[in-house]
Image (tube, rainbow, N blue to C red; front, top):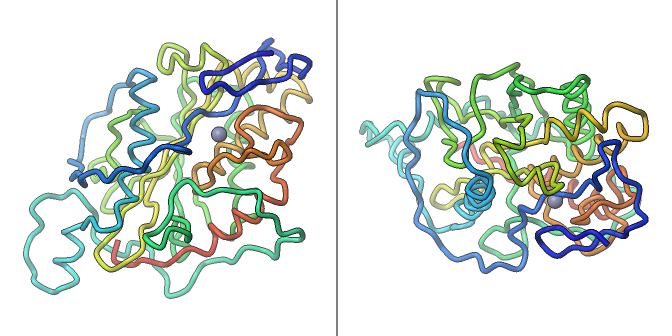
Length: 316
Ligand SMILES: [Zn+2]
């Protein structure tokens, strides 16, 4: 029995990756933790590449970004001022001009789920306590990949994962190309000097064990998103981050069986990215530790379809 930091057991007979590791899922869940209100922080734009942070800090920060968006009563002041037509210059350029690429209707719809299943959980909920926090389906979700340490075939795997995620959610994803941004626990969701007047794209990074020491323990990925909640509107995710263990993926992608594992890890992390939390059912891909499930299962697909029907919030 191999255990990860969250105490999840992995059957000792489970097939390991070509690197000899048992792939273990991300430990980024906020499950079971009280979602204590936290003050909304204005994120100051950073024109400088951020340094990679220690892994514990990175993990905590990713959790924090989720929690930030859960505070439904917290105001994002700048969009409100603009909407009110006051013409007042925002106190800081901490948020972009609202409505970038926002359409009048969702860009896509999730397909019918063949087998509805309640075996799914959401990482964050609206003020009603049941509706999930999701990405705005009325605008495309951009993502960029930091090219450093990318394993052979890795970027193709990421693109394939986003395509699969789009099929399951109806959400539309756009690849922006490589970025010089480094993963950081202090990542600003708005970086106008690097990405222009819009929310920063989802950042996908291939990390090393020196950058993310949790990878030493067998964790091979982590992901999360940042939500914003303007007054009177639902919270929506505006950007996120996916960190993948470059060395582990390089090993997994060395043969066909490992590549199937690698694909499953990416799909699991992308599920987190759009708002899925772990579930206790080992028959789902969002089970917190590795299993024989290599693709989204009925519970995952039911949850993803719900996450594809989020609210459109052009005020952001
Ligand atoms: Zn996970």
